[in-house]
Amino acid sequence: MIHQPLDFEKPIYELEKKIEEFRQLSASEGIDLSDEIARLEKKVKKLREETFSNLSAWKIVQLSRHPERPYTYDYIYLISNEFVEIHGDRRFKDDTAIVSGIGLLNDQRVVFIGEQKGRGSKDRVLRNFGMPHPEGYRKAMRAMDIAQKFGIPIVTFIDTPGAYPGIGAEERGQAEAISESILKLAGITVPTIGCIIGEGSSGGALAIGLVDKMFILEYAVYSVISPEGCAAILWKDQSKAPQAADALKMTADDLKRMGIADEILKEPAGGAHNDPKSMAQTIKEALISALAELKSIPADELVKNRYSRYRSMGQFREIGK
Image 1: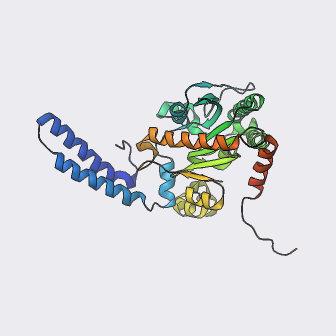
Image 2: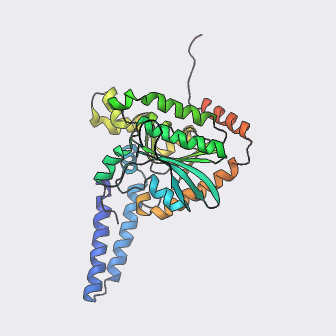
């Protein structure tokens, strides 16, 4: 059952709540309510299918930010047999908005890197709501160097509203850290796979997003800027965020059509937060399949293909000479 429903999920939540009440009543009073429960369950299933069959871009953005949605840590510990985390950038401090370390994907050693928003008020503040500082990206690059040195594939989980824009972050070289991270991923000779699991916005997402193969969850988004940021710039009005979400073409279907995402990973009914274990298994199977494919490609060809992949993205016209 959804515990913190979004506005458009509330009718589903109310029905699920009623089903739970009937079950408790049946157990405590010995009343047979199986027919009524079955009827409501059928109604919930139909309502969920109708609600999620034609979501607007803005509703998908809301789902990508759902407070119960699984985060990087959740997926790592659900798909990895073991995980040893790397802390600190050896320059300033440990940025907990970025998670990095070495784990096992079945019997394959993998370097995991991902953004972590935090669960609950205290943890969200600790992790700066998933907005990394420069030291976060430098920690990620430490992990990339380990992957390069020992020939370990890299898996990144993208889920951030963007890199932290504060004065301190800028003073410590935020833009430089992001660009260095992108450059390192561009030239690294091990297989790299990305998975957009929630909200991927701005350079904060792209910093760990230049990969050989990109997966995106069905209700995740990926864009150069958040809808609110776009609306504030174009219309000076954040209330136009739904309109901006449509214009940005940031949903999984849009990204797949444009060739930015290679494959859409279908989420459980109602979103990944309704069945994290099932979603993690889907991700694990996709990663294992992609790794098997990429490991067969020679290192120099891997880098060449990666370069060609990103050079060919986008559509444009040349007007005049």
